[in-house]
Length: 416
Image (tube, rainbow, N blue to C red):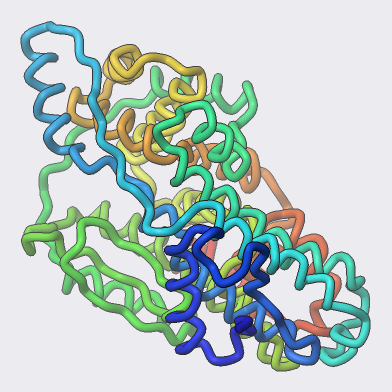
């Protein structure tokens, strides 16, 4: 039996069952799992992306199970001026690595079914079949790195290689810039946290109304705010014990930051409606994270909501990732971050996070390398895309794709 992803509910059950098995446990020695219908190739690739995005997610599959316990031990050792060496216990993904890779390789092969007939169906004007195939292949290639980094997280060398294949390290100029800014920024603690999740949700509704975006807002008992493009829902964090509160400046930053992510997802869906193209641009394309996070920080700067404290933290995150990339020992990473001005607790959190996922450099790095001083930012609002994909797709605006409803002047104006 082959999966063609035409029935998403059925496909979700089938693919999860398959991913949990080793290749040897499947029905045949060489088992072909995927067989997509050429006439409906884009819709079925979209359905596959939606399902496998959930299963391959690093948010779901990567983590340190004993992080809080190790943080307490670190803080005790630090207060006693003793050396600390972490004993992290990493989360195990539910899937079989080889089977998942096989499924993704099959989907990469199925992308070859995209041809000129496919493009004619969606009224494409200038994009070539190979360019469009490449956009889809990149999605599944990136997922392969997600699968491999989660499966090999205890093997630091392999884990790091796959992280950097997704989130390439920033250049030396960017690193020097962050080192300099950490020494220059004057910060102060803002303990005036009088707003709760309901207040944030109200701010977000007003902002979405100004931008003309129809999107769901939910309050959940989680620690961090986030966007769920597949559900067209953005989540306000209430804290796991209903204890999350926000300062006014923090609320303003989160409003501009999180709703930037919403705007790109919304644009990606809307511009696909012109010719009934499956809304992949509003869900996920390959290797778009650096552009995504950099743009959110660009919006913080352009709308004048970013504070010195937030700038400091973005630079600190970048340095934590850089020290991990340089293979500094955990003790040295935390010591260097403390020298830069981090609290011991924050230094542990950043060092541990970058041992789970080496990607904190993309925030400040994305802003500095992809957005600051650029004059061609409107094309980056086509959807959840990187610069390379945007260059390919922008020539289809007015052809296969409609105009993005939310533009740079809407997102980056101070009056917003």
